[in-house]
Image (cartoon, rainbow, N blue to C red):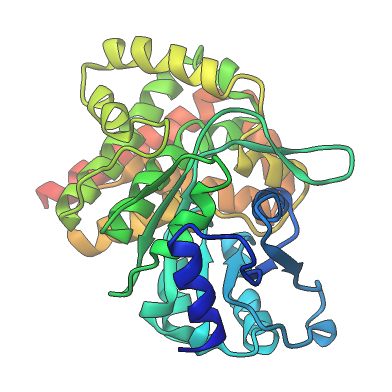
Length: 345
């Protein structure tokens, strides 16, 4: 077998003495990319980062490529990988990105058997040097997109002491992670508030719970069963959202305030950084798109997606919603009324 395969077999057997290093190529030198890169370096893995500019990319003999960019940069990351990975047919492409749809893009480019979906549940910040550091406990979930098994890959990450779980259905993995990423994210961004304040906006927080119900309904229609991720019980989250709203608010409010607290969620960070592109289309927007295909109403996620996208492209609109939950609630209620009317037509 080829050199990479020999490395894999020996690492899978947990014999690391004298083994030639695995070569890992990381596209995206942000918090997640540097966190995972530093973890792998701690267990004697060779890690290289792709240059930002495509013209600076040179071939690298990678056994593993980690795509650690925002979902809206996946296409450009694929171009980097085409140029930077010497032998893509012998490389495994790992996608710990938020949202859904990235795995399919990589599978189209490099083949499904060469792609592994990943879900990182470790909240990551940055130290003074700009490297990713964990701010809370979590773990890493994997699921192969194709039919290939990569026990050596799971073993390598597990050797870092990071909790690792392997799942069979990559769609269930990514949609379960999507359930977590959506909570107190778009609504906080639109209102420009932190999660610990959002939970005190009773009516908007009730809409947040409805948004969770919508993704649960979409997953059921897709035939996907939610799965618990390392240290995050997704099934319990979705079950709580089905309870009467006052009970759901009480149960989820304390958990969200405690877990997220004063940390700005990803979409709020994007708006505060004046980014015209956000990941809302692969988060709330993905729920809406799937709901439209399957005939599942998603009025809350539809408004969250539309309003946030409008703000990202026209920042002056943000003043209409900042710390004004009544305005957001009114728009969602109007969309819910429109949805009910259409269902009766």
